[in-house]
Length: 283
Image (cartoon, rainbow, N blue to C red; front, side, top):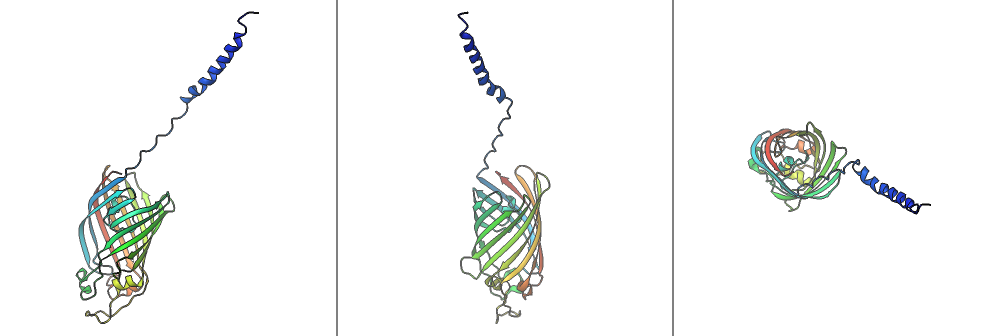
């Protein structure tokens, strides 16, 4: 027997271990590389632009008011400060737009909840001749809680409840909406929306009521709470390049219930159109 015979099993074992150790490394090259993680979205974003628009002089009026006004929004994380149309440039859909400060309270893949504060400028006799001699709707601070839910990647519903928190007879409002987003291209999307608005008696009295014994020629009218408006609209937003975005929108609304029967309602159906341009960073 050769004195090298006991070494043969050791050589075999070493060869087997070498093969086992080299197998994962050999196959690692064939395995697909792990997907690169998406970079985190920036916390700070803003939009700065301007909008030209035309709308009724007041809800139910037959006059028109045309305007050129700034539209901007500043976001930091879950907090936002914006004008009424600034949120549109940030791509937040066709739902009710209100100026002011807002914060996202909860957000998931399909559901979101937010709270906001805004200044309601009210209404006075200078808005239309028919309003001269009537009590003004005083400006106030409104608090709003809003919720939205994505039924599908394109269909969504939402609701918002706002309240005058300064006790200036602003009352409470409830708005509901449904929307459909059509991504025409990577740069352009079209959003269709419809909604309904409700108000309590205080809100309806302030905006559509006529007090008895007033100096005007209009008959007294005391509206009750309920549905006062329905509306529908379309909005087109298109990115010209990485930063510049153009926006166009049209909306029609119709007063209902006591708001439609009010002596202040001259034209129950109103429409508004607008077009704007803004610079966005850093979405």
